[in-house]
Image (cartoon, rainbow, N blue to C red; front, top):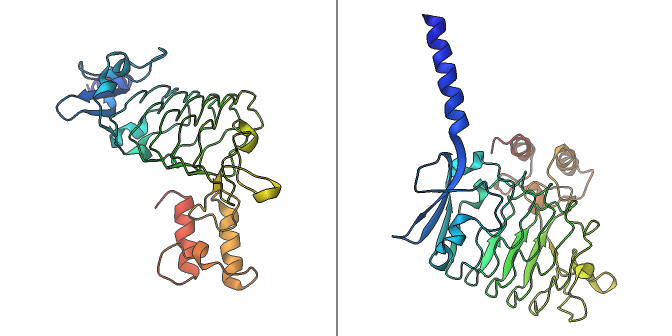
Length: 290
């Protein structure tokens, strides 16, 4: 009997796991679209679709949505595309819980925020994108946005960025990290068309003659002009754009006096001192404990 009960429990667990999926629920009462992972209720939309537009867009909810929420459960989801998820949400002003969006399996982000005309900024620094191939029109028409953080984006597989920032007339700052590269991009038509407010980290301003990928890199000043800005990543003590064991070594060398001390980078626990407790803090960051 005990074995039989264990078998039933095992089957039940398997069926429960099988039923879990990524889905979205639109609530008209507060004009909110919420993303979950679990057993999908009837009045919900599946996230995993191969259609050009998700159902919450084809059902014209985008005309009303003002807020998007990613529930903590969504951290378990692994969507394969986020194309047009927020397409033409002209009333969208707030996105909560983007840190719960795992993009490690996503291959396309095309038109993801296209024409989100009321968004002021976007922090996508939690999004890692090793499999993404398309960023075309991702932010096109976001004419109120001023700052976009793409500091964790890996673009090694990206081949198209056509119209990526087109008509982002108020966009001033785009942060990228060490994994941003244009090596695989061969389609970048009008990537920065009408981005007249953009300024690179070294002061490069918009040039109407350069609206493709030529300036889609961290600004190197007059000798290597670019539209992007490098971002200091918390824990990136050695400044290579990554946080790993080499930063622990660099931090120890700073404390021992073998490297110049940079308190802004080395004071990781926020106590205004740089010592072994910062090393412990950094190790816990790398291990995901904090």
